[in-house]
Length: 106
Image (cartoon, rainbow, N blue to C red; front, side, top):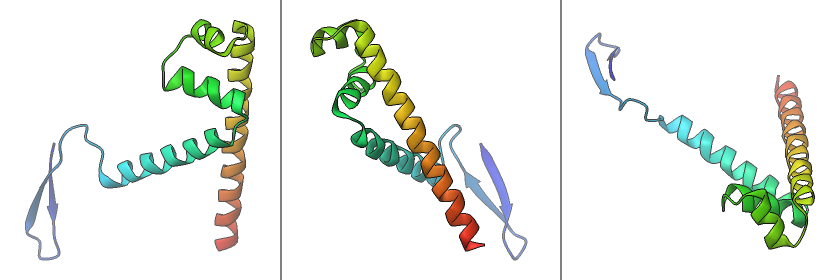
């Protein structure tokens, strides 16, 4: 994609941006999200954290997770469910704190 911008003198300044390539602010935002998610996963109870990491980083099935952790498939599924609920709660708490911080700054 080719963007044409005008600077203060009215001259055209060409800027070439590769199609589909995220800009620096997008990359920074993704890095911050990844760091936040890792911190939240680290705060999960060990059994929940283990299932999340096995499922998403190792891409194991719930049957494989159950075998490796010596539990039933339903237990592995339950641990994942509670992990996701805990991560959702952490996100909501973070959003509430961020909103409060913004309101206090106004």
